[in-house]
Length: 225
Image (cartoon, rainbow, N blue to C red; front, side):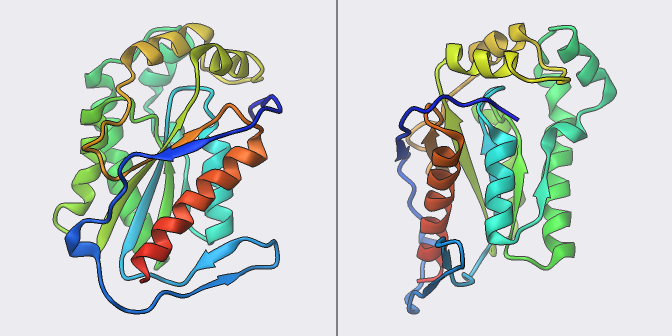
């Protein structure tokens, strides 16, 4: 679990517009659950929500929160790394594109399979997805399925903040040096990546979780409209 300082969070959406093929004209509806969270009614598409960002940004905490509140299957991407990748990261050796490629393909396939077997409207997956081309590997899931939409929730923060949070972890294989290497590799979502949401993680964990869920809910309400 990450340690967050009690600062305010902010968020922005990187041009998140539903593609023309994903719009419709039926009425929008929503409900509010016992915890006060506003829930969108089931939409017209299935969704893969990839929670992304460098080590220490809080991917697991945010993903589990979203999955719980939306009653969706949750996939921890790190659990799918082969042993060779885990050994490299534990030794502070950055992963190469070749190291990540099969892992990304496996995550994509697993997300689609879990979505189908669970018969749910979506699935939540953690994956650093540091580069544009890594995100493109996941996007392939929707290329031949017009009922499926892939979204990225990018959790961003400054390197020093995330480094402090990684140092506070106990029993995790990610080392300090890996935070720096991930920032060196990081390609933040660009304006043309219209499937990306952006959440600032400088605030408290509850603030970040709630803001990420709020943005996800906004997309789901748009899809149900």
